[in-house]
Length: 321
Ligand code: SF4
Image (cartoon, rainbow, N blue to C red; front, side, top):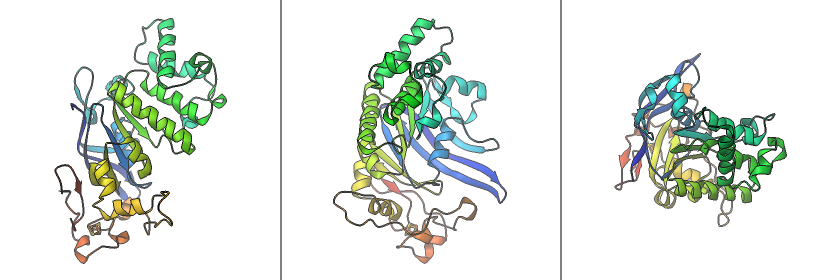
């Protein structure tokens, strides 16, 4: 499988009144063409900031170090050094994003079709109007929007939540990106619609050989769409491996805690992880999970645990493994 995205030691620092903080801390990951990686963690773990770094959408004043390379249709581009002008050719055409709540991402006063057409025109401004329209309808059809010609004439508020998310997926894929970042795309949907959107994304990934970075706090969702899983905590990847392996045999106490806190039909009462994700301005020394970990030892506060490979492709960051 050819590598599409390669991230090595990526760090994002933001200025705060209390000094610089690192919402993304030496993150490394890889996504191949047609491969799906689920990025899991609680709110505040750094998932969204990582995706914004990969889209070149970081807040003003952010400092970035490390590497992120994307194999585009024509060459390999180093995302961390692109100028805003260069980003305009990459964003949408090579790497696109679907957000959590389509109602806040879609323009409420523009018809759906016009919004998809705009995404196409941004990268192919010389395309004739009728061809843009045809491609927009095709994109809606590919995203399984029923009666796409009729839906293209409607405004976002006239569509259901599921159809709005399909329209967002159509917009994201309209310019033919090779990598799709989906940031909690089903959180605002009810369970049956959620399953349809997950099936749609999975089908599109296989059909178009898309790389898919699927961000979620829900391990049940990961089990449905991801081949590999990376678990993030306080800005770092603390476990990574094949989805089946990580979900069946989690190595890190945090991943084990997330699984125990996930609802299933078999499991009765849920066991929440005590405490909350630490503030980036007040990270504990050593392992950031230490204050919440029921297995902690005195030495856990000495240094940040190394990322240790257990099997050929399953690794975690804990001194006990
Ligand atoms: S390093 Fe220590 S505190 Fe951190 S997860 Fe492992 S056992 Fe728990």
